[in-house]
Image (cartoon, rainbow, N blue to C red; front, side, top):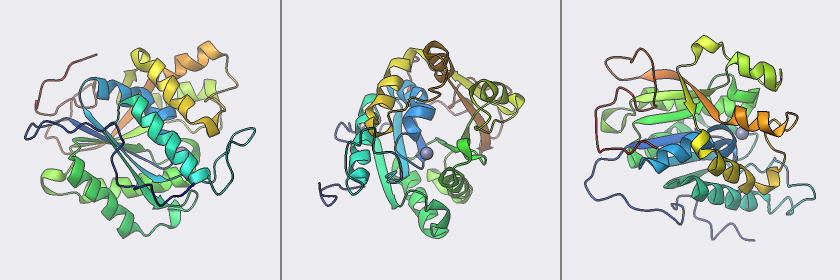
Length: 270
Ligand SMILES: [Zn+2]
Protein backbone atom coordinates (compact mmCIF):
# COMPACT_ATOMS: atom_id res chain seq x y z
CA UNK A 1 0.00 0.00 0.00
CA UNK A 2 1.21 3.47 -0.71
CA UNK A 3 1.85 6.16 1.87
CA UNK A 4 1.55 8.89 -0.72
CA UNK A 5 -2.24 8.88 -0.70
CA UNK A 6 -2.27 9.51 3.04
CA UNK A 7 -2.26 13.17 3.90
CA UNK A 8 -1.05 13.36 7.50
CA UNK A 9 -2.64 16.76 7.95
CA UNK A 10 -6.05 15.71 6.68
CA UNK A 11 -8.83 15.53 9.24
CA UNK A 12 -10.41 12.16 9.86
CA UNK A 13 -13.08 11.30 7.28
CA UNK A 14 -15.94 11.73 9.75
CA UNK A 15 -14.87 15.31 10.51
CA UNK A 16 -17.74 17.65 11.20
CA UNK A 17 -17.09 21.35 10.96
CA UNK A 18 -18.18 23.39 13.99
CA UNK A 19 -20.79 26.07 13.40
CA UNK A 20 -19.09 29.14 12.01
CA UNK A 21 -18.30 31.70 14.67
CA UNK A 22 -19.49 29.58 17.59
CA UNK A 23 -16.93 29.29 20.38
CA UNK A 24 -16.00 25.68 20.91
CA UNK A 25 -14.78 23.65 23.81
CA UNK A 26 -11.64 22.02 22.53
CA UNK A 27 -9.48 19.24 23.96
CA UNK A 28 -6.16 18.14 22.47
CA UNK A 29 -4.24 15.00 23.40
CA UNK A 30 -0.59 14.83 22.38
CA UNK A 31 0.59 11.23 22.12
CA UNK A 32 3.57 9.26 20.82
CA UNK A 33 2.13 6.12 19.18
CA UNK A 34 -1.12 4.88 17.65
CA UNK A 35 -2.99 3.12 20.51
CA UNK A 36 -1.78 5.48 23.29
CA UNK A 37 -5.05 7.37 22.79
CA UNK A 38 -7.29 4.30 23.10
CA UNK A 39 -5.56 2.41 25.89
CA UNK A 40 -4.75 5.31 28.18
CA UNK A 41 -7.38 8.01 27.63
CA UNK A 42 -9.96 6.40 25.33
CA UNK A 43 -12.74 6.89 27.87
CA UNK A 44 -11.91 10.57 28.36
CA UNK A 45 -11.82 11.23 24.62
CA UNK A 46 -15.14 9.43 24.06
CA UNK A 47 -16.79 11.24 26.98
CA UNK A 48 -15.84 14.74 25.88
CA UNK A 49 -16.63 14.06 22.22
CA UNK A 50 -20.07 12.84 23.32
CA UNK A 51 -20.54 16.09 25.25
CA UNK A 52 -19.88 18.15 22.13
CA UNK A 53 -16.25 19.06 22.81
CA UNK A 54 -13.98 19.25 19.75
CA UNK A 55 -11.51 16.46 20.48
CA UNK A 56 -8.21 16.21 18.63
CA UNK A 57 -5.09 14.08 18.64
CA UNK A 58 -1.59 14.98 17.64
CA UNK A 59 0.34 11.70 17.42
CA UNK A 60 4.07 11.94 16.79
CA UNK A 61 4.78 8.55 15.13
CA UNK A 62 3.11 5.70 13.26
CA UNK A 63 4.38 3.12 15.74
CA UNK A 64 6.40 1.23 13.16
CA UNK A 65 8.46 -0.54 15.82
CA UNK A 66 5.38 -2.08 17.40
CA UNK A 67 3.92 -5.53 16.96
CA UNK A 68 2.54 -6.61 13.56
CA UNK A 69 0.10 -8.94 15.28
CA UNK A 70 0.36 -12.66 15.96
CA UNK A 71 0.24 -14.00 13.29
CA UNK A 72 1.49 -10.86 11.51
CA UNK A 73 -1.25 -8.88 9.76
CA UNK A 74 1.11 -7.06 7.41
CA UNK A 75 4.73 -6.81 6.32
CA UNK A 76 7.17 -4.61 8.26
CA UNK A 77 7.06 -2.14 5.34
CA UNK A 78 3.27 -1.97 5.53
CA UNK A 79 3.13 -1.50 9.30
CA UNK A 80 3.22 2.34 9.45
CA UNK A 81 0.28 2.68 7.03
CA UNK A 82 -1.50 -0.25 8.69
CA UNK A 83 -1.20 1.36 12.12
CA UNK A 84 -2.28 4.71 10.74
CA UNK A 85 -5.49 3.08 9.47
CA UNK A 86 -6.02 1.44 12.86
CA UNK A 87 -5.56 4.82 14.54
CA UNK A 88 -8.04 6.50 12.19
CA UNK A 89 -10.57 3.77 12.93
CA UNK A 90 -10.06 4.18 16.69
CA UNK A 91 -10.49 7.97 16.32
CA UNK A 92 -13.76 7.44 14.46
CA UNK A 93 -15.02 5.13 17.22
CA UNK A 94 -14.07 7.70 19.88
CA UNK A 95 -15.76 10.51 17.94
CA UNK A 96 -12.62 12.55 17.42
CA UNK A 97 -12.81 15.53 15.12
CA UNK A 98 -9.14 16.01 14.24
CA UNK A 99 -6.15 13.72 13.91
CA UNK A 100 -2.70 14.82 12.89
CA UNK A 101 0.20 12.41 12.57
CA UNK A 102 3.68 13.90 12.67
CA UNK A 103 6.48 12.38 10.63
CA UNK A 104 8.72 11.07 13.41
CA UNK A 105 9.94 7.50 13.60
CA UNK A 106 8.87 5.24 16.42
CA UNK A 107 11.69 5.07 18.96
CA UNK A 108 13.44 8.18 17.66
CA UNK A 109 11.41 10.92 19.34
CA UNK A 110 14.13 11.65 21.91
CA UNK A 111 16.36 12.78 19.03
CA UNK A 112 13.71 14.95 17.34
CA UNK A 113 14.74 18.53 16.64
CA UNK A 114 13.06 20.32 19.58
CA UNK A 115 12.36 23.56 17.74
CA UNK A 116 10.67 21.73 14.87
CA UNK A 117 8.38 19.51 16.93
CA UNK A 118 7.54 22.27 19.41
CA UNK A 119 6.62 24.44 16.40
CA UNK A 120 4.35 21.66 15.12
CA UNK A 121 2.61 21.47 18.49
CA UNK A 122 2.21 25.26 18.63
CA UNK A 123 0.61 25.17 15.18
CA UNK A 124 -1.93 22.63 16.42
CA UNK A 125 -2.74 24.98 19.33
CA UNK A 126 -3.37 27.78 16.84
CA UNK A 127 -5.54 25.69 14.56
CA UNK A 128 -7.61 23.85 17.12
CA UNK A 129 -7.55 26.37 20.00
CA UNK A 130 -7.67 23.77 22.77
CA UNK A 131 -8.44 25.12 26.21
CA UNK A 132 -7.18 21.83 27.64
CA UNK A 133 -4.17 19.77 26.59
CA UNK A 134 -3.34 16.24 27.76
CA UNK A 135 0.01 14.52 27.38
CA UNK A 136 2.31 12.07 29.15
CA UNK A 137 3.83 12.86 32.53
CA UNK A 138 7.58 12.92 33.16
CA UNK A 139 7.58 9.19 33.96
CA UNK A 140 6.21 8.52 30.45
CA UNK A 141 3.54 6.18 31.80
CA UNK A 142 5.69 3.09 31.08
CA UNK A 143 9.07 4.86 30.98
CA UNK A 144 8.99 4.59 27.18
CA UNK A 145 11.59 7.07 25.85
CA UNK A 146 9.14 8.33 23.18
CA UNK A 147 6.53 9.03 25.87
CA UNK A 148 9.07 10.91 27.98
CA UNK A 149 10.23 12.88 24.92
CA UNK A 150 6.71 13.93 23.86
CA UNK A 151 6.03 14.91 27.47
CA UNK A 152 8.98 17.31 27.32
CA UNK A 153 8.09 18.80 23.92
CA UNK A 154 4.39 19.23 24.75
CA UNK A 155 5.19 20.83 28.11
CA UNK A 156 7.59 23.33 26.54
CA UNK A 157 5.06 24.11 23.79
CA UNK A 158 2.41 24.78 26.45
CA UNK A 159 4.77 27.15 28.26
CA UNK A 160 5.76 28.93 25.03
CA UNK A 161 2.21 29.38 23.72
CA UNK A 162 1.07 32.99 23.71
CA UNK A 163 -2.08 34.95 22.93
CA UNK A 164 -5.52 33.52 22.28
CA UNK A 165 -4.06 30.19 21.12
CA UNK A 166 -2.43 29.55 24.51
CA UNK A 167 -4.27 26.65 26.16
CA UNK A 168 -5.48 27.25 29.72
CA UNK A 169 -4.63 23.90 31.30
CA UNK A 170 -2.09 21.14 30.78
CA UNK A 171 -2.77 17.73 32.26
CA UNK A 172 -0.51 14.71 32.50
CA UNK A 173 -1.96 11.22 32.19
CA UNK A 174 -0.98 9.43 35.38
CA UNK A 175 -1.19 6.13 37.20
CA UNK A 176 -1.71 6.36 40.97
CA UNK A 177 0.65 4.20 42.99
CA UNK A 178 -2.21 2.20 44.52
CA UNK A 179 -3.43 1.18 41.05
CA UNK A 180 0.07 0.52 39.77
CA UNK A 181 0.62 -1.96 42.59
CA UNK A 182 -2.22 -4.18 41.38
CA UNK A 183 -1.19 -3.89 37.75
CA UNK A 184 2.54 -4.39 37.65
CA UNK A 185 5.68 -2.90 39.17
CA UNK A 186 6.78 -2.39 35.57
CA UNK A 187 4.54 0.67 35.42
CA UNK A 188 5.77 3.69 37.32
CA UNK A 189 3.09 5.24 39.51
CA UNK A 190 2.69 8.66 41.03
CA UNK A 191 1.71 9.21 44.67
CA UNK A 192 -2.08 8.91 44.96
CA UNK A 193 -2.28 12.37 46.53
CA UNK A 194 -0.66 13.90 43.42
CA UNK A 195 -3.68 12.96 41.25
CA UNK A 196 -5.78 16.07 40.58
CA UNK A 197 -8.65 14.43 38.75
CA UNK A 198 -10.05 10.93 38.42
CA UNK A 199 -12.55 10.49 35.62
CA UNK A 200 -15.01 7.63 35.86
CA UNK A 201 -15.32 6.66 32.22
CA UNK A 202 -17.42 3.54 32.74
CA UNK A 203 -20.29 4.92 30.59
CA UNK A 204 -17.83 5.07 27.68
CA UNK A 205 -16.06 1.80 28.42
CA UNK A 206 -17.60 0.04 25.44
CA UNK A 207 -16.29 2.72 23.05
CA UNK A 208 -12.89 2.51 24.74
CA UNK A 209 -12.94 -1.27 24.39
CA UNK A 210 -13.80 -0.98 20.69
CA UNK A 211 -11.13 1.66 20.10
CA UNK A 212 -8.52 -0.56 21.76
CA UNK A 213 -9.68 -3.49 19.60
CA UNK A 214 -9.35 -1.35 16.45
CA UNK A 215 -5.58 -1.55 16.96
CA UNK A 216 -5.57 -5.11 15.65
CA UNK A 217 -1.78 -5.34 15.38
CA UNK A 218 -1.55 -4.57 19.11
CA UNK A 219 -3.89 -7.37 20.05
CA UNK A 220 -2.57 -8.10 23.55
CA UNK A 221 -5.14 -6.46 25.81
CA UNK A 222 -3.91 -3.97 28.38
CA UNK A 223 -3.17 -5.62 31.75
CA UNK A 224 -3.70 -9.02 30.11
CA UNK A 225 -2.40 -10.87 33.17
CA UNK A 226 -5.36 -9.68 35.26
CA UNK A 227 -8.79 -11.35 35.28
CA UNK A 228 -11.00 -9.66 32.68
CA UNK A 229 -13.44 -8.10 35.14
CA UNK A 230 -10.57 -6.57 37.12
CA UNK A 231 -8.93 -5.35 33.93
CA UNK A 232 -12.03 -3.42 32.81
CA UNK A 233 -12.57 -2.08 36.31
CA UNK A 234 -9.08 -0.56 36.13
CA UNK A 235 -9.68 0.73 32.58
CA UNK A 236 -12.91 2.42 33.71
CA UNK A 237 -10.97 5.15 35.51
CA UNK A 238 -8.55 7.57 33.92
CA UNK A 239 -6.28 9.71 36.08
CA UNK A 240 -4.77 13.14 35.55
CA UNK A 241 -2.37 15.54 37.18
CA UNK A 242 -2.94 19.24 36.54
CA UNK A 243 0.60 20.18 35.59
CA UNK A 244 0.17 23.77 34.42
CA UNK A 245 -2.65 26.30 34.50
CA UNK A 246 -3.08 29.81 33.19
CA UNK A 247 -6.30 30.25 35.16
CA UNK A 248 -6.16 32.90 37.88
CA UNK A 249 -7.49 30.47 40.47
CA UNK A 250 -6.97 26.75 40.71
CA UNK A 251 -10.10 24.94 41.79
CA UNK A 252 -9.60 23.19 45.14
CA UNK A 253 -10.91 19.92 43.84
CA UNK A 254 -11.19 19.12 40.17
CA UNK A 255 -14.17 17.24 38.82
CA UNK A 256 -13.75 17.94 35.11
CA UNK A 257 -10.88 18.78 32.76
CA UNK A 258 -12.63 22.06 31.94
CA UNK A 259 -13.18 23.12 35.58
CA UNK A 260 -12.43 26.77 36.19
CA UNK A 261 -12.77 27.81 32.54
CA UNK A 262 -15.22 30.57 31.64
CA UNK A 263 -18.42 29.21 30.13
CA UNK A 264 -18.48 29.04 26.37
CA UNK A 265 -21.24 27.11 24.72
CA UNK A 266 -23.40 24.83 26.80
CA UNK A 267 -22.10 21.31 27.14
CA UNK A 268 -24.30 18.32 27.68
CA UNK A 269 -23.03 16.24 30.56
CA UNK A 270 -23.24 12.57 29.75
ZN1 LIG B 1 3.01 4.68 23.33
